[in-house]
Image (cartoon, rainbow, N blue to C red; front, side, top):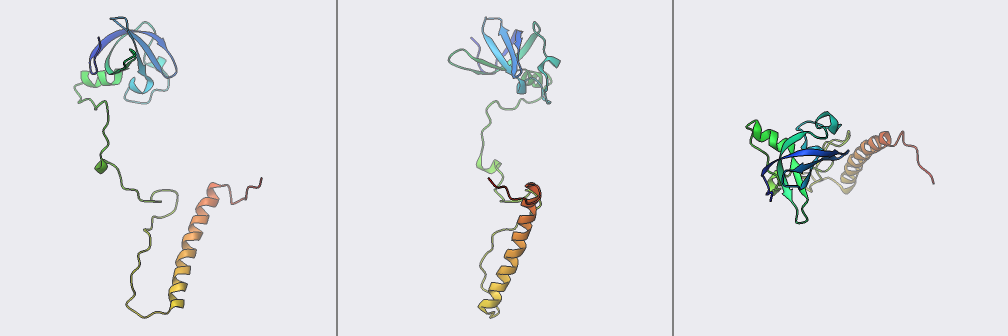
Length: 159
């Protein structure tokens, strides 16, 4: 019986576009997913594994129905003396980046939402309205400029 994090040895019995099937010594078959073959990008599994080749891998998970998920990448990390990455990643609130709205998307600069601050000077309603309209027009023109370039020149789609 194979347990999680056990190192197993087996023979590659089949290769598909998404991974390689490995038959382990006790007769069970496991899958090495394409993302678990190497630390780099794998475009073709045949560059790394061949049918009939004997490989060693780390068991990532063992399902109740006997499905076995293997990782050649984690075995290589252990062999090289690197600290293996945890199998199941736990997300913590402090790990996530705060949502900054439109920051970093397209050509629009990030601007925080307006905050009401009472003005020290006594400006009229018309002055405040004209200032708001000016700021609004600037932001709207930047938005239009960005979306028109992504839609192919601002042509309106009809249909």
